[in-house]
Length: 201
Image (cartoon, rainbow, N blue to C red; front, side):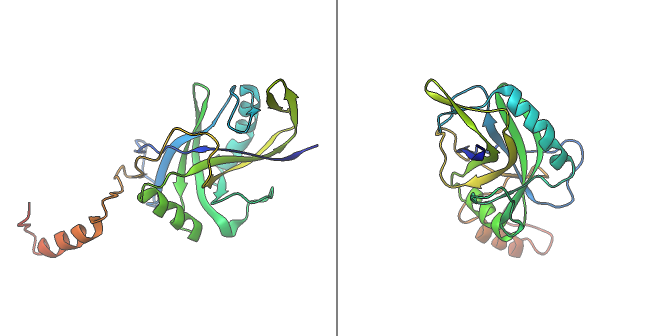
């Protein structure tokens, strides 16, 4: 019997610099591991690489159509609720057995919360949501061939420890400054440097 399968791990963001053109949105981009194949995950489940390959090939239709949306927090549903959308996956690739993703944080209410968490160094988990059945094989539960990937969501509680958020980069390659006095310093610099010369540099 098919059930909702949710897999969670800490999402490690790396700076993203777009080489081939710039996005016109100006929204922050983060990059990290979305999933790992061929290992027992924190939920005791095993996904084969062939299974992930098949589902990512299908999911690329959504990525290419600019509608690979996900939510902040997991609903117990197979429907992506637009009022909770926080991000859009822009690119998916393989790095060894890791499924890597570049994700645009959207300026929605949930996206603004997600952006604030990243800017303040709060570790955030990324979690796949899909429908499928499981079969016990020794100490692990193997995800069966009827698995259908729905999306990836950002969540608070990861099942795989280890990687933590370091920094977030904008699509122009500018790092978001997480210094607590950054806004104050920026305002003071703007005031002092308003006449075209800047006495503080």
